[in-house]
Length: 599
Picture 1 (cartoon, helix red, strand yellow):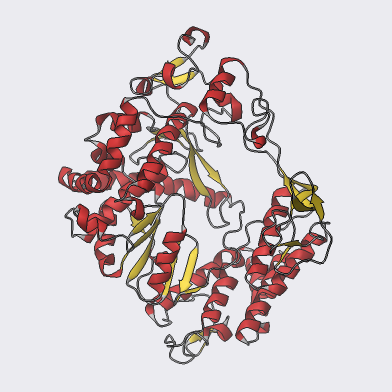
Picture 2 (spheres, rainbow, N blue to C red):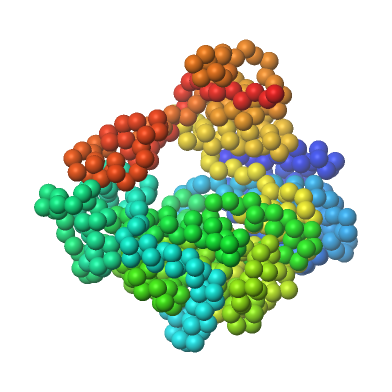
């Protein structure tokens, strides 16, 4: 904990230098609060302070309902008052017309530095996350009962207008058996990992009618007798397994591990659906799966007063009603059957309870992300026209003003109220603390802007490594060091580098752009590199990441099927039939890295 508070001090010194203020009293406050409250002051209290700060920016003034738990001096909190006084008037708390962007960036940097640090939550917080998951399902049941067939029909009509061509193409692929399934890299509910997934011996009766096992799993016709398979009835199917993974100290991430067979065909639909959505001339500019930059640029435009709002949804993945998906896909029976066939109907909670699902899918389903964007976009377009579907020309006119990337939504400012009502009517929840349509602050897809200027903070993702055996932590900490360096936080970057060098990492500096576990520099390092005569580039011996896939031997018909299902000719796939899956550990060791020298 001491090293984290020291990092905060050095980051504060960097910020103070940028804004020409002093931070000694602020640092003493941090030391006292951390001693009294523990690490939660850095990971939870300061992010809450930042939420109030952003709300004040949105309102245009600092209200007495903000910054609870902090002393006040005049019209502002005493903590970080040097920065705050460059943004708000000291006595009235009103936002200054020429608020310092550097001060705004500094407050956000110092408050959000540790927000995203991955740590195990307390058992109480984990239990609360599971309770919230169940309560979300109960809430969706109530919403589903309130929605009338007419409500769902209106939503479906809007989706047909926007996504009809995409659904036509995907429906044809389903009917002509043109899908190319694949296994995802993650864990599965039936505990098959890596190459073992290609030896699956279970299929479901629901999928057999639309995704025949003999076509999508067997490498060739006529080998079914050599590949025993059990076709599970709906009662025998494995439920999606709800698990908690580290996210922040405040709350864990709740995801669902899907059964292998279902995930296999979910990937088949997703890998065809996503390109169709991105390439479609009507909906392509309105949804995003690969590139976040369009959302960021729209957020920047919104911060410049161009009438663009940024919305963020809470529990986004868990709040998409399956009834909405059924209504949207109803004109395409084959596609609808395919989507429902590979959807988990139940979830198994960590406490052993089975929960019938009203939602379409939890995070973990390969179809969760694309289907949620289809629903989100349809709902907001419907809201923008007061509950009446927009026509194709009207949707085309929204290019450059509306965009959905996951739960990050871009809409015109003058349609915010209508869109929020529409989202909530269909069971979705707007996160008002992270949604902005007043003032000059906007954030979307990791891009935070004030008055057109980048104010995105650098965040710590993991605790500092204690030895050279902490491979994943070393990689994360070196990335932190370089991000701080890139953003001009020199003292903080130097402190992090000292931590790494104390365990023998980071003594070799490399040019910006070099892929290595090493500190970067924008200047040309004064050292001699070795020229690789075979590959014709310069290289340097430095620490690099070494992550070896676990042993996972595959042979026979399953190995043949794997070779047919993808291209494994790349050098990194060598030995894929003996080793596969996510590495169980990450190691850092000395090796050769290509040096990216600037002309």
